[in-house]
Image (tube, rainbow, N blue to C red):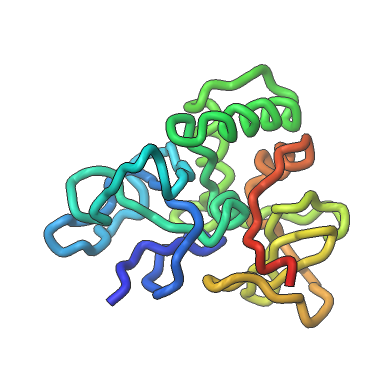
Length: 205
C-alpha cells in the first residue's frame, strides 16, 4: 500500500502509487513506527527539494526519526507547493535558483533562511495554501509556473497551460478563466529572471 508522501501543487500530501522524480522534506512529520504522517504538515520553514539519487545513498522511506521523505512529480510541482532546491544535494541548482531569486526579487544575494522566511509567508494562508492573483496573461508567465482554475492545477510550458496529475501532464482542454497563481510570487520572479524549472517530460507529448 502506498505511503502518504506524494505532494500536489497545492502542497497537500497524499497516498498514490505514482512515483516522483524529486524528493524533499519539511522536517520530521511522520511516525516511523507506523510510517504514517503526524497531524502537522511541516516542522521547519525550510521546505526543500532534493534529488532522488545522491552519492549512492539509500534511505528507508519513513523508516527512521529523520526528515520525512516527500515526493514530487517534478520541480515545477515542488515550486508550486512552496519548496526550493536543496543546497546540499543540489548545490548547483540551489545556487542558480538563489541568484535568479535575488535578481527577480531585486534583493541582495540571500541566505537560505531569508528565502525560507519569504516563501513561508507566500505559500500558506493560515493552514491552507495561499493563492496569488494572476496579474498577467497566462502566456506571459514563465515556463514552470503553475496556476489553478476550477480546482485543477496547470503548469505553463511553452506559454501554454498543461493539466497536471500525479502521473504527468496532458494538454489543457479549454481556456482557463479566473486562474490564480499556485507558485509563490518570489519563485515566479526567479523563473522570470532565468531559472529553468525541471518539468516532467509528459509536456512533450
